[in-house]
Length: 191
Image (cartoon, rainbow, N blue to C red; front, top):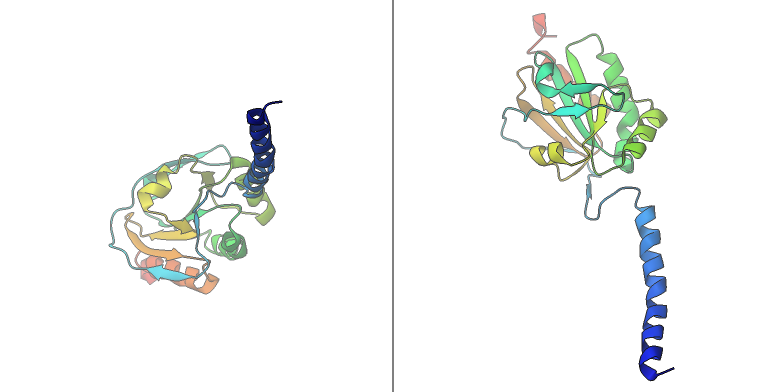
């Protein structure tokens, strides 16, 4: 064998473990794209209140929701992913609040981003999520809303105007305060 062939063979042998490591790392990522932000710390982001961009989302239960069809209700749009630890941490608080406000003009919409449909479905089952949720497979909704990390929540008033934006795992009492403040504008007698 010529010296050139030995060099090629040695180089190929050295690269095989590297490719194996990269393949293993890709499978461990669970759908999280490189550089995707995870909002570990909770906080409210200052925003210019504006009309929320309308979207239609195919829900994982086979139905469809259009944001503009929810006018007249206070809406919380939650951007999340199954691999997101803060999303997992806050899921029971979101479920409790959704149940507590079920008889009031409130709707939650869960928009799964940077994830797989299978991962999203497993998350909904594991955490018993009852509110409407679907996968933003192409990222168009997240892009329109300027989502940079997850979880991120947008609170819309009954006219479809974005009034609040929160990042990070949301404490249940803050979630309820945000809903109550917007409901005070909608319900007779101020809630």
